[in-house]
Image (cartoon, rainbow, N blue to C red; front, side, top):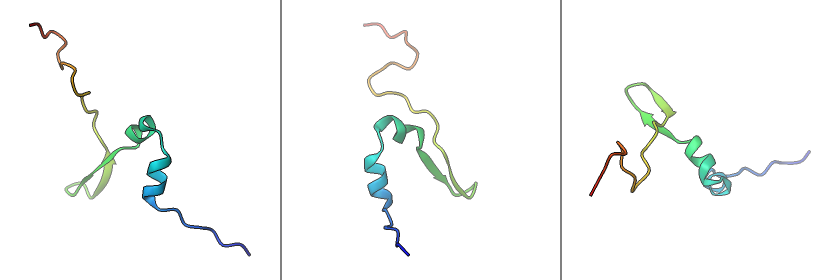
Length: 54
């Protein structure tokens, strides 16, 4: 019988691509009782409404 090597969560996270990490992101919400998918976050450096002028 062969034993399986357990893999830490940190090791798994390091092997994931940044895009995949973003897809798998979760946030803990105590009021709902667990981890739920994270809401979309804005990309830093881009205007939110797209109508920004100098």
